[in-house]
Image (cartoon, each protein chain N blue to C red):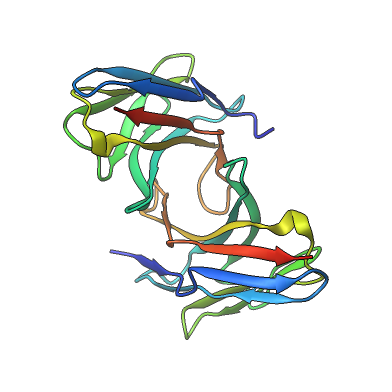
Length: 115
Length: 113
């Protein structure tokens, strides 16, 4: 079975600063995808960024980027120039079972932005 | 707006009762997933339907059942409700597999009293 671990239940960062959220995972697959989802107080789950395991280049979406280390099975999310609207729960997720591809989620990290 | 619609947004019901949660996926998305989010269990996969057929079951109780109709909307039926069933229930839809994004609805907050 695949596992996703987020070891930081809570993080805080000053507005405009940079913060990194950690995620480690375990899978027997050699080709897979990884996602970061954001859940703001509105509770809507929103895709932040995705990474394809076969790509060595780290994914970037505006202020969001990942540090993907396949050998270490690590997938951290870096948020640059943090904004108040970034305050949310962040979940790392890994699809499993080809053809089904349900998402296995980590336990989440609650990010607080300090004005 | 993700394009995935869930109704109702909130539901309060008594123990032992039965409720139905409804999900309309994004236009063209054949896959519908149901997830349960609770404080102690986090986000757990319940069941996956693809074009009307059940594809996989996760940690879904026997008291729970689901189906996907020809118009692709899905319903999650929860019966003999217990206090521990109180949670946020999400529906998500995807157009395909692999890197395809799963779009989530806003969830149904179920409170069992």
